[in-house]
Image (cartoon, rainbow, N blue to C red; front, side, top):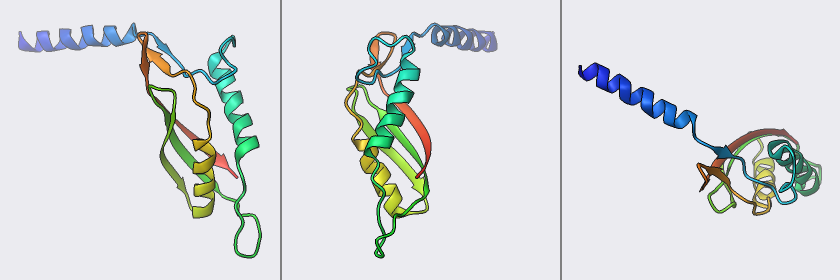
Amino acid sequence: MKKLVVIACFLVGGLGMANAQQTSPVWPGCENAEDVKKCFNQKLSQHVRENYEYPKNDAGEYVRGKVTISFQIDENGEVAVNSIEGDKPQVNEAAREMIMEIPKMEPGTLNGEPDARNFTVPFNF
């Protein structure tokens, strides 16, 4: 009988989560977009092109590298960097600075309430 009650609780809880209404964060300028996620991705790509500044080494040469950035758009629509993985510290720092320049946006929601969303994106600078 106890097993049946536990199984029923999992099923009811799972159904509740299946009906949860989620929305993505809305990048400024995407408010009226048909596909907010697609617009978000386009704006992120544009932001990277316009805001990433290649660091230079002591010889004045540009430093290039691969990074994977994990960041969050929090309940207030602000960006927080969770982690940056890459083998070039200068590239990692330049990537951090670029991500921190993402504009404040309308946060994602879960069942009508503001909700933080995590993103992990690989870049090849």
